[in-house]
Image 1 (cartoon, rainbow, N blue to C red):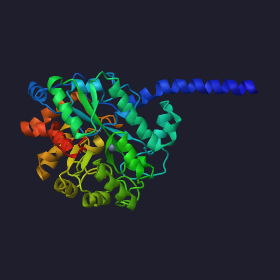
Image 2: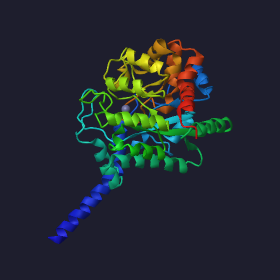
Image 3: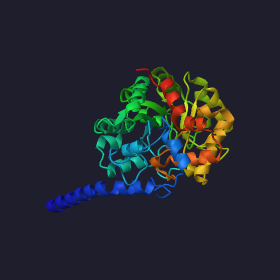
Image 4: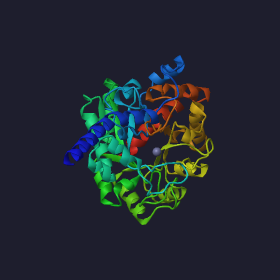
Length: 390
Ligand SMILES: [Zn+2]
């Protein structure tokens, strides 16, 4: 009998090892796809203009959630360090996802639904501390980015302050193969309801945080939750602390009532790291014209996402049409890239296909200086002004 249990345990162990070595790749390949085939077809004009850009940046990617070594040029996934170098990226936001409800949708998710990230973490063979604590998941993923930087031979720098960013900009003048990234958190349920964890995340290098993700949490209502409520008392405390620390507030995924509450309360400019606009594609995850105007008045930045859930089925023309809508409504200085790369989304192209956007921007009559602004100059200005100084 004992022998039977022993053999069963061994078999479970072997199955688990097989699972963690094979399943995560397969899961990611299916979830983070591209619709166009490589090599991408890019005009000479777009290519030349792209190559002349000094600062290219993107406000959102979830590459840290997956198992890939980000120092390797992977056959799948949208972002890794070699691809960033190939695409001449100066700064990429790496956002941390800690919980995602089973059956996730844009309309209605319960906070206590089964959590996909628990299951994914187990299948990935991440440590048990990761399985049971949202805060541990955030800290684990922030360490993953630090390890990536350490093992990159100086190719990849983590940016935590405006001083770091100035340093990166000057380094890139002599060596443009050096690329940068900064840490964000998608959904402040990672705080596990504790205000002191804002400081702990800040210590761990987190410089941007979105109050909610797909479900309501201690801070208030998600755009895809149940309550639709604005900021709770705890939410107000978190916003105040983020302002004090200069941790950037990301309005993606929060309820319309919470957008109003935060714009009323914050003393700092905010951003929306990955979104679409209702005028192009009406969805609970997208911004109304009223909110676009309010974010403009706040001096905020709006990153346009690349996937159908944000821009509809119109592909690259719809991405650029969404950018154009924000430009027409509040001015070019508020528009940025917010791909949502590696966020369980299928997009037209990975990060090396960004020049394709320029072809479409030219077709939609964007000027060279407007293209520069969207591709990264706006993000550079915003980050220099809103990251902590040191
Ligand atoms: Zn998201």
